[in-house]
Length: 153
Image: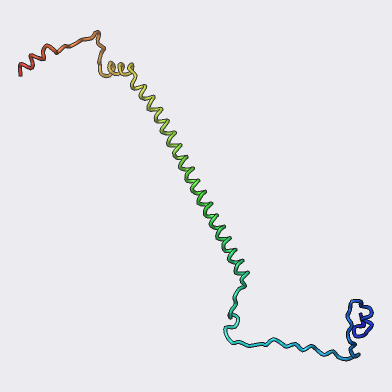
């Protein structure tokens, strides 16, 4: 509104409180406020007491803790994965050696049955060594000569 210094402004504004009229065209006196005192301190210049706010320090600490936990969890995961892989490799090696031992055991059982067969032994004795089977059995009895041998000594 254009009537700020007259009574007409108060007539249109129902909420305004009454104020004493100001003289027309009177320059308003500026409010005198006391300025804050400005002290010049010589010293370190820009490096002087540049502390961070406590909220920023807290956020920085929390961030560092979160990053440290992230790295710790990552290292733990890598360690667990490496140990799992080494255990699985050990199991695979053990399975391979177990399978080869089973195959060798089967081969040895077959060789034992082949080489231990009575017919093979009989054929080797007759063919290679020239042995023959006896027609009958012979029994030697040395019991009668035993006392004579004892008297001779």
